[in-house]
Image (tube, rainbow, N blue to C red):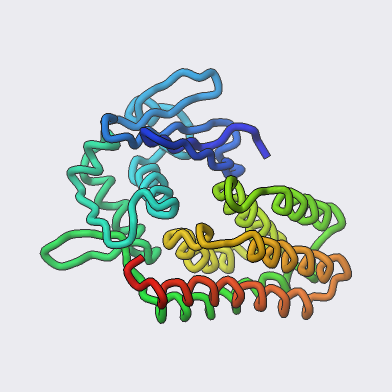
Length: 276
């Protein structure tokens, strides 16, 4: 994977996201601090150019302003900068990103279709709020979908892909759940995304994405204790063991158990703390 990534900067923090394959030649630096008014794309040479200027280049991220805006707003929702219930004002977002309201409107419609945004009559758009019952239902779907992905992977996986998953397990185990939360979340996503890729179904991957991002919106990883992190790591290892032996049925079963374990943690927390 390329060393460059997408950096979403606020005034206090910076998070780097590994680029997708189509973005390997370019990295994007998106400045969302309160004092900023433009989106800048940082090329490999380090030069900063505006979103409007970058549109002249064959950069996948900014070829379409609405796609770029969707990515930026989605990441802000997922990493908690735009929390559940937060109003999303077109004019304010357009000013922050230095683009017109039209691509912002299109971006919010796309995010609404993904289930991350709600349109409220007479109030506009807001980050969608889910209750514990909603999330329990979504986790049931996620268990079915990711279980099926693990089963498919068990019939397709190569030795090199087994090694790739094992390396992800090593990186996950080496992280500190108290001081390296973002890295922990990223590595967990790498593991699950790799299995989806091995499964070889773009339709399945698109469906899983819609239910896998919501726990991040609710920042469930913040409540993970070191013991819970070890449990997740154990499930990852067991899934790899099943895939190594090409036991597709067992890989599916363990993946479902892994998802249900995560569901129980998130739902129990939300029911005990309904205001969070």
